[in-house]
Structures are given as C-alpha cells and as structure tokens.
Length: 262
Image (cartoon, rainbow, N blue to C red; front, top):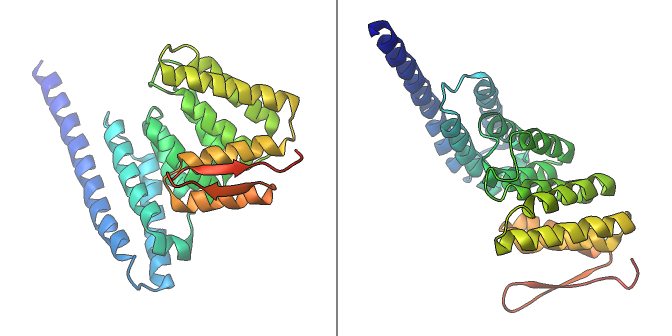
C-alpha cells in the first residue's frame, strides 16, 4: 500500500514538473510574441517562429500525464497570442496554425471552441484547407451527437470548408446532413434551427452541386458569424468575386444581393 502511495505521488510529481516546465517554456515565448508587434526585423521574427515550431513539435510528443485538457488549453492560449499578432502575421503568415490545431485535437478533441478558430486560421489564412478538414475529421471520431454540447457545429464547419475552399459540394452535402442529424437529436431552439438550416443546405447542394448561390450563402455565414476583420474582408471579396454585392447595415449586419443568375 505504501508502494502504491509512493508511485501515485511520484506520478503526480512528475506531471506537475512537466506542466511547470511547459509553462516555463511558454511564458517567455508569449512575452516575445507580444513584443513582436514592435519594429522587429523579419529575420528575428523567423527565428522566433523556428523556436516556436520546435516547441510545438515537443508538445506533440510529450506525455500529458492525464493533464490533457490543461495542455490543450495552454496551447490554445498561445495560439491566440500567435494569431492575434497582426503585425507579425502580416510579415510571416499563419503556417504554424495547423500545428496548434493538431496538438489540441490530440489532447482535447472535445474542445469545441477551438474548431472554428483553428479551422479558419488553417484553411483560410494558412491556405491549408485539406489539413484543416483532416484534423476536424480526426476530432469527430471522439465526438457524438450529445458530447460535447453543440458538437454538430463541427460538422457544419467541416462542410463550410469543403464547399468554400475545396469546391467539393458532395462532401459538403454529407457534412451538412450529419450536422442536421446530430442537431435534430436536441430539442432546444438553437439546435432545431441549426438542424433545419443544415438540412436545407444539404438538400440545396443535392439539387445544385455547382451553385454560386450556395457558395455566397456560405460565405455570408462566415461574414456574419466571424469576429475577425480579416475573415470578414476575405468573405466580402469572395462574395463579390461570385457576383454578389455586400452592403453594410446600420446595425452592423450585412445585406447580401445575389447575382441575377446562379
């Protein structure tokens, strides 16, 4: 019994040391990322990115000792620092986004809020939608219609990326159908609305697999749901390239005018 106690104590101790080391490695990095908004040379920024990439590779391999959620949350906080550093991202891009995403999916695939943020960053800004979709597919293996709450949003995000970035209407249709099925298993108003919207989208794609209207409607969803100004600009540009027109309303919403022909 004493042996069991010592083993348990040792395991917890090692875990705490790893978490402490994890934090010790990351806090200086977070400070450096904050300073990167100042006039730091491109060479210095690229050096920081190389160091950060090495740290992320380490976190993909290090055992979490049952602290998976804590590790995933900490990596997500570091991702927010990385993504929010507009000045640095304008110079060096978003290539590390899928690395953050991969670690979070590995350690906490039920971290629902991370899917929309990291799939947008990976697919839209890093230009790796295939990677983003593959990671969402991997995460979905650990989800169910009931757990976590509103997990159907991951299917909707997957369908959105498949339609907008890959132009794969058939895969998008299947994803929206799954979103409808999962959401229909809940009786609250939000879930029922998502179920109806997703089913309508899937049915429309079945009838019109090459529809510009469907793409514009999906970009409109990105425009109206995203809090990131860069994503909004990308959505407006895409809508206009498809022949639509975006007019801002006084209340902050947007009016979308479809082209005359689909």
